[in-house]
Amino acid sequence: MSPSLASLFVALAALLSSTAYGQNATSTYSEPNVPTGVPVEGNYGGPLRPQVHFSPPQGFMNDPNGMFVDADGVYHLYYQYNPTAIVAGNQHWGHATSRDLYTWENQAIAIFPSGPTEGIFSGSAVVDVNNTSGFFPNQTNGVVAIYTLNTPERETQDIAYSIDGGYTFTKYANNPVIDSNSTQFRDPKVLWYPGTERWIMVVSYAQEFAIGIFSSPNLIDWTHESNFTRHGLLGLQYECPNLVEVPVAGSSDYDTLFVLLISINPGGPLGGSISQYFPGTFNGTHFSAIDGAARIANFAKDDYAAQFFSGIPGSSNHISIGWASNWQYTNVLPTDREGFRSVMTGPREHYLKELPKVGLSLVSAPYNATAAVDQELAYNATLGNGTLFVDYGAVESRALYWEANVTGLTDSSSLQGSVNFTFSSSTTGEYVSGGTWVSTGDVWLDRGHSTAWSNPFFTDKFSATGLYDGNGTWRISGIVDRSIIEVYLNGGEHVATSVFFPAEPLDWVTISVKGLNESAQASVGVWALQAAWLDQADVNGTVAGNVTSS
Ligand SMILES: *[C@@H]1O[C@H](CO)[C@@H](O)[C@H](O)[C@H]1NC(C)=O
Ligand SMILES: *[C@@H]1O[C@H](CO)[C@@H](O)[C@H](O)[C@H]1NC(C)=O
Ligand SMILES: *[C@@H]1O[C@H](CO)[C@@H](O)[C@H](O)[C@H]1NC(C)=O
Ligand SMILES: *[C@@H]1O[C@H](CO)[C@@H](O)[C@H](O)[C@H]1NC(C)=O
Ligand SMILES: *[C@@H]1O[C@H](CO)[C@@H](O)[C@H](O)[C@H]1NC(C)=O
Ligand SMILES: *[C@@H]1O[C@H](CO)[C@@H](O)[C@H](O)[C@H]1NC(C)=O
Ligand SMILES: *[C@@H]1O[C@H](CO)[C@@H](O)[C@H](O)[C@H]1NC(C)=O
Ligand SMILES: *[C@@H]1O[C@H](CO)[C@@H](O)[C@H](O)[C@H]1NC(C)=O
Ligand SMILES: *[C@@H]1O[C@H](CO)[C@@H](O)[C@H](O)[C@H]1NC(C)=O
Ligand SMILES: *[C@@H]1O[C@H](CO)[C@@H](O)[C@H](O)[C@H]1NC(C)=O
Ligand SMILES: *[C@@H]1O[C@H](CO)[C@@H](O)[C@H](O)[C@H]1NC(C)=O
Ligand SMILES: *[C@@H]1O[C@H](CO)[C@@H](O)[C@H](O)[C@H]1NC(C)=O
Image (cartoon, rainbow, N blue to C red):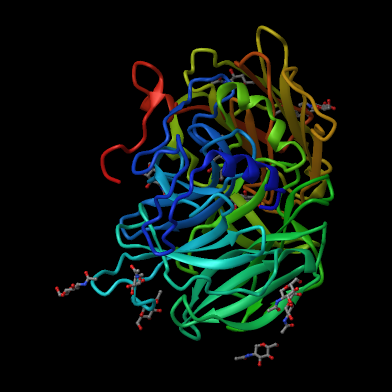
């Protein structure tokens, strides 16, 4: 993250009396009104509050941090969190956990700044199963968080360790572990590289457009190995790098490859924030991109700083979650009237696939959406050139998953027709819509017909072009969740993530198909998703989170 926080820090400093900050103490320093040891409470009942996407109980959230899956299958999501205001600043690590990545339980804030001019900026976490760090003599589930400590003087890479599985952290006594005397050096992401039995860190020299690669035997002593400098789109800063080894589908050359994901902000091609990625090879010290192309991870504007869960073996598809917002407008989004700003993307499963013409592409498929399904609302395996309409006003979550498959395609002459979707408000007529042409491969999304809010940077129409790979099907699917929509073409060969803000809740969906080739058929389904947050609320509508075990 990068906004200037200076004015906030000045305001906060004025609030604070002098306090002794123990660098080594358990991370519980807190300003007035920031709870320690219990989660921040929230009300998730507002009409713009997503029900199967993560959003903070109250206050402001940005980048996902520290994501790991533990040995019990619990996914841990930390996040850049300002618990004292609904704009960026005063960065803490908020924390939530999930078993299915759709139902989240809020946990107590995990890492606090040690004083008024500190910010706990973005970073990652790993389970130090072999106790390489020495922090965990008697356990295999010790967690080390590696994060950027931001102060007015510099950004350093610091670590903190947790002996209780990631709920509370103690800052390492001899921080920082890397100091390059820079104010623009941040967002460390660490992975274990078995080839050299070393921890590997990718970290951004943000304004020099370089990703530094460091190695360490113990997460404490780091050696600079190489830089990956000025590749692809620069924007005005590189942030939040990830290096991850994923399987490659449809290639005779590779079983797996590494992906280096780099977020750029500001200066994304659609304005503001976006992420690009490079498929390539990694040998323990150097990353080499397979080619010179910059590949963009999302064709809309609300997907930044995504992080991959650590703890997933290289032979499995990897899972990421991104921040579904954009620095161009995140601080002024209208959800402040519901007490929060920003949501995360849904969980996405990733692998590389050889696509026609363009070659290697990172597929981003919705991760096991069936885990979030409450009930089927409509299904028609032979819709043909027809229209499916569902009134989902009675669905408590107002969140849906839908799919449309065109099957029976043959050669390129069979690529005809289009599939569209519209989610609308039966009271105001507001809507969000999109679709795909089987004929050209184009896919589009239009969020420009919600009336609750507008902003010059909140551009509204997005598109991309997919490629038919000859296997007989063309698919579009997605999730709509009150104020966020995610669209997946061909199982995630293209993905769009967009927030939108209707004045009244959307409650009608229409999926229509026209002009298919006579060999083709359309199969369409719509499912209601759980109200995963409302289900946790007490009679007053308060979601308290895990008040027992932290
Ligand atoms: C680890 O276990 C040993 C033996 O039970 C004990 O003496 C020691 O205090 C423990 N260390 C920690 C850090 O818990
Ligand atoms: C700080 O923590 C380290 C272990 O991380 C320990 O060796 C040291 O004694 C601690 N220092 C204080 C002052 O608690
Ligand atoms: C650190 O950076 C500052 C500002 O660029 C410079 O004045 C100072 O000499 C640097 N310190 C070291 C130890 O390199
Ligand atoms: C732990 O140690 C085992 C045995 O040496 C090794 O195979 C594995 O890669 C190590 N994993 C980590 C995360 O340290
Ligand atoms: C890596 O990049 C940083 C930032 O540009 C630079 O300070 C450093 O000297 C580079 N290291 C090497 C070995 O090129
Ligand atoms: C890793 O790749 C770099 C750059 O190609 C090369 O200089 C280095 O020798 C390689 N290291 C190993 C262990 O192969
Ligand atoms: C999908 O989620 C359901 C419900 O949580 C679970 O039973 C199932 O095992 C999951 N499937 C996969 C492939 O993870
Ligand atoms: C499916 O759609 C077709 C064409 O629109 C319609 O004729 C048929 O009755 C529908 N089937 C079901 C099960 O709704
Ligand atoms: C065909 O390809 C599409 C998109 O690449 C994919 O979603 C679908 O699962 C594939 N179908 C089969 C039968 O392989
Ligand atoms: C989808 O919308 C486009 C743009 O309005 C239109 O040209 C196309 O005919 C529509 N297709 C369907 C199936 O409604
Ligand atoms: C869909 O309409 C096209 C003409 O636009 C026609 O050729 C095709 O047979 C129709 N498909 C079905 C399943 O009715
Ligand atoms: C669409 O195709 C996918 C992949 O083959 C399949 O899993 C899914 O059930 C299909 N959905 C519908 C609505 O037919």
